[in-house]
Amino acid sequence: MNRPRRNRRTLAIRSMVRETLLTPADFILPMFVHEEAQDTPIVSMPGVTRWSLPGLLRDAGAAHALGIPAVVLFPKIEEPLKSPLAEECHNDAGLVPRTIRALKAAHPTLCVITDVALDPYNSDGHDGVVRRDEHGGLTILNDETVAILCQQALCHARAGADIVAPSDMMDGRVAAIRHALDGHGFQDVAIMSYTAKYASAFYGPFRGALESAPKEGDKQTYQMDPANAREALRETLLDEAEGADMLMVKPAGPYLDIIAKVRGTTTLPVAAYQVSGEYLMLKSAAAGGWLDERAIVMESLTAIKRAGADMILTYFAKQAASWLRM
Ligand code: PBG
Image 1 (cartoon, protein in one colour):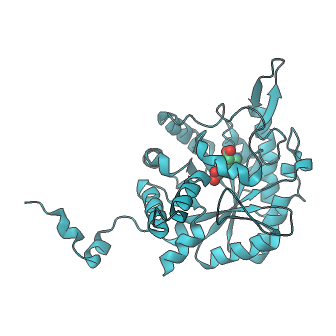
Image 2 (image 1 turned 180 degrees about the vertical axis):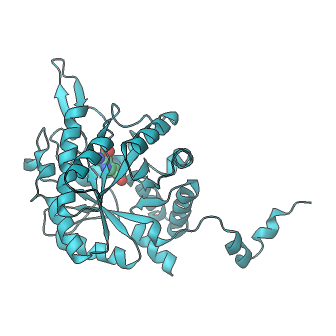
Image 3 (image 1 turned 60 degrees about the vertical axis):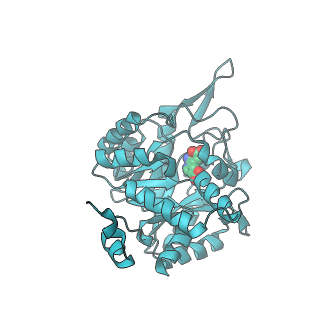
């Protein structure tokens, strides 16, 4: 008789045959920053904070000390600075470039990743430039947006970003950003492309955190249809051909099949983003006493890695890293 249970009999044996191991080096911590002097708890994401600059520097240092190699920055931009063409996104004196410079000065070995997309800066709340037709219909302009994304990526590179991460889902942006970076001497700045970013309801709490929800319409003409898997492979091949250094699937937990397919299609490193709605679901079930928080968080992260992710963007990064060290 075949007895697979022999390999599960003791803790020692189980630890020898374990196929997937998490380490703090797998994690990338998403961090929210605002212009204010105080640190503000984010109501829609219990346990997550929108930081002042000093608060962010402290928390990023704590994350790095736990073995987390990278953070990714998301700014909350003041309403008066938002505009239809999102000019603030490439202001060298803006919140993100200032934060990058301060982070690199305070923590030189920390990898700084930035989000490249217009939504926090755009008065329309879309990731791209909006055109309205005479019937009130909205079009998100692709090529006009890509030109601005290139300026945004250059602005982040000038401030010292290690990796830029375009999350906008415009066509052709990876090639355009690569070309712009190379043309300005930033050959060493990498691109982590949001390759398969779905038009997901799981982003709700994030948009609450930044007040960046679209004022009108939704993101379905640029983010992917949750019903589609082959299309993710089309995006994978394009991003690879356009020069991306790392690919990303987002959300993560409900899209494990996509992570596995992308992993099988590319030789590039694959990242997966456990997004705000995934965080909130686990966090609130644990807060209600219905799930064991540590067990559920580690299981969800292990599943994402097992599916094929090399890196995981997660709001649980610090917690998980400290559990792994205990
Ligand atoms: C915006 C962006 C979003 C997220 C990361 N970058 C929101 C969106 O596309 O509407 C979501 C992250 C999360 O939900 O945790 N470009």
